[in-house]
Image (cartoon, rainbow, N blue to C red; front, top):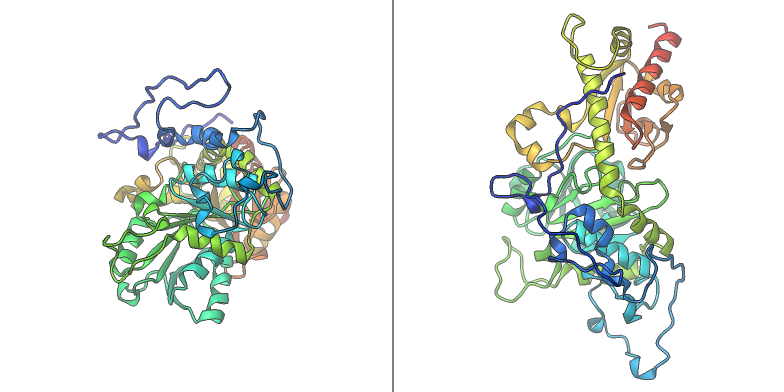
Amino acid sequence: MDQLEPDLPGLVNESHQGTNGTTAPTQESQPSASNGHFEPTRPRQEYFPATLSVHADDPLNTQLADVAPPLHVSTTFRYSSDPSQLRPFRAATRPNAPHFPFQESSSEHCYSRLTTHSTSRLETILSSLLKAPSITYSSGLSALHALMVHLVPKRVSIGAGYHGCHGVLNLHIRLSGTQILPLDCPAEDLHPGDLICLETPINPTGLALNIAHYAEKAHSRGAYLLVDSTFAPPPLQDSFVHGADIVMHSGTKYIGGHSDMLCGVLAIRPGLAESTPEGQDLPLGQKYREGWMSRLLEDREFIGAVMGGLEGWLGVRSLRTLELRVMRQSENAMHIVKELHDTLNSDFDDVYAGTLSAENRKIIKKVLKELQHASLQTKDLQDGWLKKQMPNGFGPVFAMSLNGAELAKHLPSKLHLFHHATSLGGVESLIEWRTMSDATVSPDLLRISIGVEDWRDLLGDIVQGFGALVEEFKL
């Protein structure tokens, strides 16, 4: 098959856009230093995300000659042998970890339920990439639980999406009587301190929702907006630009990227992360508040939902290649979705500019019923908000429904390059007959998580799998 070249988006970094909306070129020379340490020639926060993924944690290297950060697995750390350096514990005397966690030279690590070398380094990079103070947890669901413990909202507005989030909210219904509202409930149903929980793109379909719309709705009532951006990590989506108060990631997915670690992340809008100065205006109905990050860190210490040293180290390793992986995966998905969608929605007499033979297109039409992916949201693209919200691509996950549940059940066993497994975001491509882990979806639906392989091989594997179904079920 000859490679198709669809209209793929170029990489856009919103913080580097010029006044005309174009991406500003990098004009500075490459930083260099004779001692081997990274010496920025301009403020560190102005570097592009791919650079920050590699260098945001360089300030933690003051006592390290290792180019690759070492793995620390210890659960406890020695205090200084110099009595004059010993400080009795006072919460207010400790550094604020998410804003450049403990320097290697400070020897401030005490116990791994508080901080470790690896998780502090991971939080430093994440805070830089997400452009907001970030804190890690043992899983994405533990991150949501921690936020609920922090906010104790009386009402949570949430729609379809990952069933695990609904499971966490069910715990809080039992514990504190939290009321669950539909995502599109009237704004008047929300009150100060309530929470809108918005997942976009949505699990398992990959469809996108308008962050700015829900931000306006939440803030008009003094409520907060949480955006679960797991399906659109940097550089695909910057939810804070569009009004999010909190951004959540299941770092198990793209932040980890290799299907070998569990992780959750909360990033807090800087205006909320720090204490509110007296006299500063607050959203409707809200009162003076202490900084969210200090309370979240204290809560995490006692909830105990912390990453281990190994997982933190794996997260740092993975973030180095985040942009490379995510952009490749998103572009792969767009190629595949376009080929399948064009076939499904064209007559055989139409002019077809893709890579599939007429015979393969007949096979696809016999098996495939529907595709779902943000790139197919034509009206939203025409309206402009979707392209603005996801300027660099529409995500590596999509869903396809087949012409019957039995076809969907059997397809994974016909594929050679897709693992039949739950989860997503790894370098390898996954397919899941979604009803295996989510009772809320139709049994004819399959979720596809595209990896970093060549998209032409993946598309060919899907088509041959369809062909095997046609033969077996005599379609």
